Image 1 (cartoon, rainbow, N blue to C red):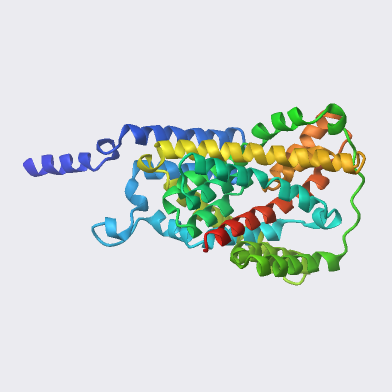
Image 2 (image 1 turned 120 degrees about the horizontal axis):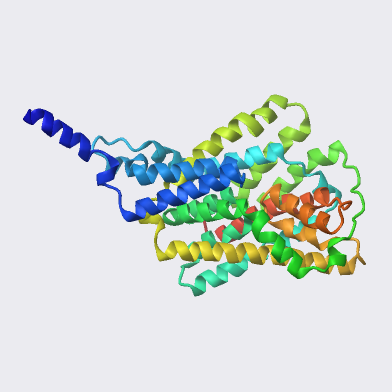
Length: 382
């Protein structure tokens, strides 16, 4: 009987109930809230579901992300190996490959001024960088945090790894993906505050057709120019443009389909669950995380505002030919930010179709955020 009692006692003490802290329960509640947003309101469910579930797992069973040195048998937890792929910049780069294979750069090629709108939206990144320094972050940490303003999760993870900020990677990634999913909530009030009804109702001329030759040359030219100026951006920009070349060349349909479907979704699962698993209660529930969430919001709001204000300037220069709303799409949350520009414009005039015009700054923002990351890596000699 004593053996049975000992066995039952050991089994009981192996359950998670004897190891969970108040912080773990808080993080479990946060994970459930994220799952609610993803499933009930469809806020970026492809990203938020795996992130939230990884968060749930690690706060019930912390060893799922334990390193080999922390385990008795020298074998790390399952998600430790997934997370290593984040730190090595493999998963973010593969995400960019898939994004490139799914992205139509035609609106950007047809209206090159979109590059300026995408660049203007990066103002939020550099303003948040200065504010992060004021709040006590060192240079590398401030840069890793401020890139959240680009609303680009893979780039945030990539830069945090390159700058040696792995300890901050979890909060940074969760903040970046959370703000990506909250684009429809955060952006419209800023857009309406900074524009007039007349500006929001501006109709833009149809974009010119883009030839196949232009589409094929675009990823090659962008890769050469950007990577010559900032070679450290090659893993992101190079993979983005390789994926797009797959799409536009028309001769590797199988590679295009694999990069934009099967490979993309596999990588999203690995990246999402590993990012979520980096948010244990001990790592996430602290003052630094609150600062990161605050700075990310400020960066994202400033980036949106800068894009809209630069759109107003272009509207003035072109004598009303550019709707300032498309400037808000300069953050790289593709294609949600472009859809928000379309939605806000249609509220003033249901016949106004801004989506394709907004896609130009939107895809320019993807390139712009990668370039901003490259600038930080150049500054810190990475």
